[in-house]
Image (tube, rainbow, N blue to C red; front, side):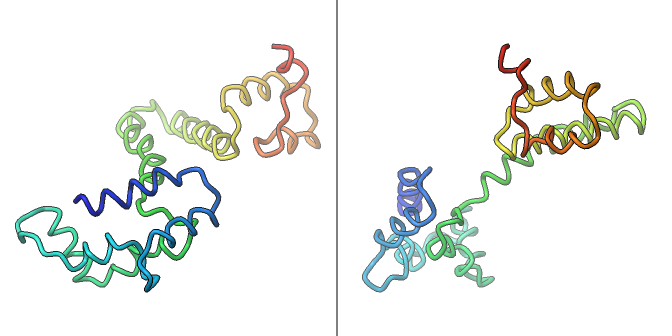
Length: 165
């Protein structure tokens, strides 16, 4: 476990760097063979008790030829060693799933899905969903159809009304 922790220590240090810098940092931490950090090679060779849950997970990775997929982050700076970001993004959906069963009606369910799509789209475009919705909903009654694309999260600029607030 300590060897695997060192991988994540490096990841914490390079978090926020650009793709090329992350890749360079990962590769310079490796052995001369260029096969990745020494802790990965050593971790692969080490044996643990077969009853240890971590050992079972590692054995599963080797047994089913997943080593190349696991170490892909060493060859591409865009890839993270975990899928935590994706799991965090889906957490809200999983938590809300039960609540959404009681939306009241199909129409209410459709509205909730529509609003959720708008909010997530704003977030994915680095736009504050509350500020965006507040501004756009206030401007919408006086917006012509040709101006609607300007109100989408990826094009939105706060209105004079919003900037004044």
